[in-house]
Structures are given as C-alpha cells and as structure tokens.
Length: 433
Image: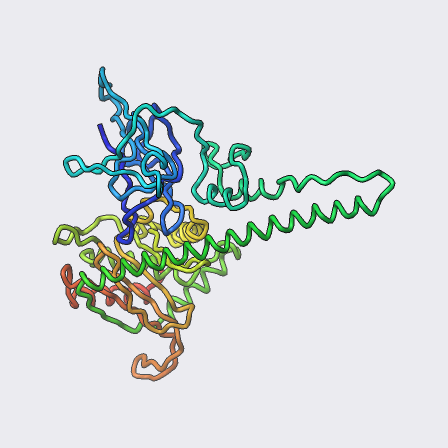
C-alpha cells in the first residue's frame, strides 16, 4: 500500500491547504495524473501522483491545512490483492480536526505524519469549492449550495462565485401601480445601484486577497533566501558576451514567423544555458544528504514575476532536447499558467537549476541567491552598446553580462568558469541552438 502525502513544493513551504480532490475512492490513477489541488503562498497548485494504482482511502477532507509530509490518501498498486478485513478510517474535516482554527490534529506514529480521525460523526453533504471561492462566498453572502461549479469534477471556483454575485437578487421592492412610470424607473435605478455595489464588493475582496497573498509570498521567499544565505557558501563569477551574432540570428529567425510565433530574446539564452549545462553537468543537480546528486534531466527553473507581486520559478522540462520553437511555446504556456495560479507540483519541485533575466528592467548584472537544494543560479543582464575590440580593431558592440552563482560545497570557481566559457561559445554560434 502506498501513501499519497502533502508534497513539499519548495524550500519555503511548510504547510499547505487541501483545496479539492479530483478523484474518489475506487478510482484508478496513472503516474503523472493530477488528483488534487493544494493552495499555497504561490497559488493553487495541481498535485500529481507518481505511481499507478487505485485510490483506496482519502484521509483528509478539503479546506484543511496540513504540514508537508502528512498522508492525504492511500493508493493500492494495481495487481496487489485487496485486504480481506480492511478497516476504513473516517475522513477528517476542518471542524473535527480543530474546532478553533480548523487545523488538523497530527499524531506522529513511527516518524510518519497521520491525521487523527473521529468515528461516529454523521455524514454531511460536501460542497466542492476551492478555498478562494469559499472565502469570497462568505464575504459576499453567497450560499455555495446554490452555485453550480464549472471547475474539474464540478468544483466551484472564484469565477463561479463572482457570477453568482452578479445575478444575486436585489432587495424586494413593492411594485407600484402600472401608470406610475417614474416609480418603475426608480426601481431600475435601485437594481443598477445594487449590481454596482456587488461589483465593488467583489473588486474589494479580490484586492484584499491579492494583497494578503503577495505578503504571504514575500514572507515565504524571504524565509527561503535567508536559509540559502545561511546554509550555502556562494561564489560568484561573471563574463561579458558579445551578442552581435545572436541578435542577428534572432532577427532573421523572427522574419520567418508570424507575430504570435516570434521568439523572445530570452529563448536562445535558455537553450544555450541548457546546452552549456550538458557540457558541465555537475552544476545541474541538488545538494542533498551532504552530497551532490547530479541530475540527468536538465529542467530550468525560470523566474517569473507576478502582477500582484512576488516571484515564482517553475520549471521548463528537458530543455536541452527541445527546439527553440518548443521552448517558446512551453515558456508562453508557463507564464500564462503561473500568473493564473495554475501550476503543477512537478513544475515547482523538479527544476535542476534556476535562470533569471532582468535585462528588460535595465539591470546590467544579476547576482542571484541559489534556491535550495539546487547548486547553481544563472543570471543575465541588459544588452548594452559598449566599446569592444574585434581582431585588434575597436568598435561598438551589443554586450551582455552573464553571471553564475555556485554552491562551493558542490563545485568551485573553475567549474563555474567552464560553464560561462561554454555559454559564450554557444551564443557565438546560434545556428547550433
């Protein structure tokens, strides 16, 4: 029997709120399938399962905050016989877990987190709604029992609540006699006024939620970066790269594409980073259990700024094996889903190195902080026209400063220098990307 646990979605995560289940007991699941949604400081994350099997038990109900590592469900591998006398525990609800703050009671057994369950409680109808939708419904006075969910498996989302608020009936006004036309116009004015008030309330609730989420994310990022500075002995290297060849190549390539298919300037930088890591693989991995664990797959975490504030670094998978057009498509999709708060758990946990580009903000050099357990971070600054000597002749060239932050426990400055040298060579021969 396998356990499906609350995953750690980054070094800055200690707890998560189970937002919704997308499966039920008895369902057969395949590796990589999304079976639950968890709300974190980074948004609503789709949680994947990493084994084939059958859901035999769900141990935690929705809207319950639990620590990382807590068993959420049990999964029986396909082909394994079913136990003849299997006692099924009663799922825990937020109110049963803790009547004051709705947090579950956690009982440690042999080092494994388990949720304390209470028998004998009467079953009640469950309304499938995300925590965001539940909070918004309470603020607007919307009864979720009357709202139809349009999310996966009928889950009520924020948009469903907003739609319900817009069609919410205004206060009852006695209808005046038909001849009194001014009174009818007054009623229409009151209806419009009520609709406007509902919209204002929705916007106010969304603003308050965004501000709270931004503060929570900043606190989580600060905690992770404090840990990184405390535990990781950083070293920093930089090099200046002539971008003439890559800019000419990019301009020629984009002439072949429609406006929607054109490549962003960062795309060849992402591809070149992946190919350079393939040449210097010790920078592509994790520092775990006091040793370097190099990874074969090159998954680049790309730093994406959120409109509400904060930064998320989801992963682009197997970048070294993809064309620039595939990378562009994946990047566009990743940015859209990140800002919509619809990422998958693997996208937050499987990045093997992080890349951040701040050139569009006018930054000349980037000295980043490594995101544990990774052992390197690559930074790109602004492309600037600067004096540059070529074949003994001084001219003006577009120059970019590339940097690398390395973990001295895993590598040293010589390894970092090898990476920057390979990166420079790749950007001078863009046709090979």
